[in-house]
Image (cartoon, rainbow over all chains, first blue to last red; front, side, top):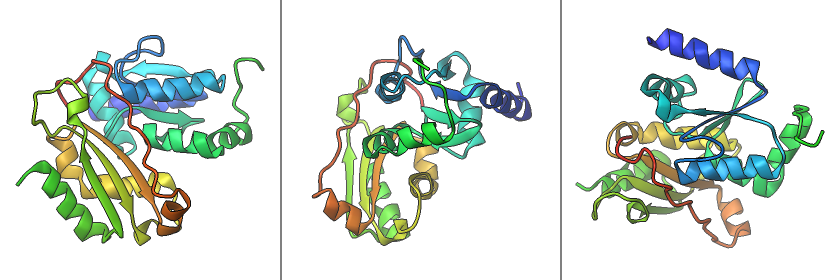
Length: 112
Length: 106
């Protein structure tokens, strides 16, 4: 798959799903502590999200780094917009900024 | 020069931080002893003033693009202004340990 196709696929994924997490492993079996931390935060908040395992696809793993000029995984996208990686998600969660963002963007929680 | 010193040098030159910690946390991951693959940064700099977290991290990532494209596999960072650092009382957050997957390449 060439770069343009990968980028198109990423665009499609983040457009079709409200909350997307590019991660190592799956939400049930994260393969990296940084990915596991973000999964933990999202689950704690009851946010429904699509987890996409970049370890299954080297092209995607590279493509997602280029897509947002962000060199590491995990990467969280909400309503098509890049939010950040593990450090940012955790810090936003601790300050309450993350919860506020989900509310403002009217993202559905599991109990809604 | 070690990767650690190179990171320190680039950040000093690019951000002239008031406080800088470059911690090699590779020992927390299953890589050979002496590896320089996982780093944690604590940076307090005026350059972060008025910038959102994503912008701050992107500025650091840009300075360390060569390292991230090469030996550095994971980079965790705390990017603070002097005021934020003071409010936190100089507390540094724990970085998560690796869980064992995809460690062999960047």
